[in-house]
Image 1 (cartoon, rainbow, N blue to C red):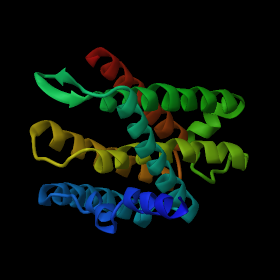
Image 2: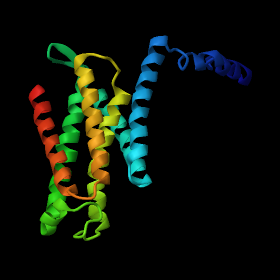
Image 3: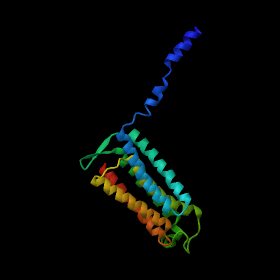
Image 4: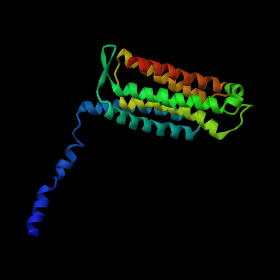
Length: 216
C-alpha cells in the first residue's frame, strides 16, 4: 500500500547525524597538516601579491595554482603509490607532475617564445617589459608573463599538496621554491634583460626535466 511504501522510504533515509559524521571525522593531526599547508601556501601567495607588478598577473598565478592542485589530484588518482628516492618513499605524482610542467609546459613555452620572437630576438633579449625596442605586442608580452606566472604557480602548489617537514630534502626544496618564485617576480618587474633571464629560467626547467626522468 502507499502507507507501507512511505514507511519503507523513511527507513531508507540516512539520519541527519550521519550526514555530518564524515565531514567531522578529522583527527588533530589532519588539522595540523592542513594548517601547515595553508600557512606555507599563504606565505607564497602573500609574496606574489606584494611584488607582482599587476593585479592581472596575481590573479593569473592564483588561477594556475588551482589548476596544478587539480592536476596533482588527477595524476595521483591514476598513478597511486610511491617510488624510492635515495632509499625513501616519495609519491609518484611529484615526479609525474614535474615532468608535465618542465617538459610540456615550460618546454612548449620556450619553443613558442623563441619562435615568435625570432625576428627581433636580440632586441627582446636585452629589453625590459617596456624597452625602447619593444614592439608592444600584447599577446607576446602576455606569453612572457604567463611563462613566469605558471612557474610561480607550480612552486606554490607544492605547499598545498605536500606535508611540511624539516628533513634535509624538504628544506632544500623550500629554499629552491622561494628562490625560484622570487626570481620570477624579479623578472616580472625588471627594466632590462627580460629575454635573457626568461630564456635562462625556462632552459633551467629543462635540466629539472632531465633529472626527473632520470629518477624514474
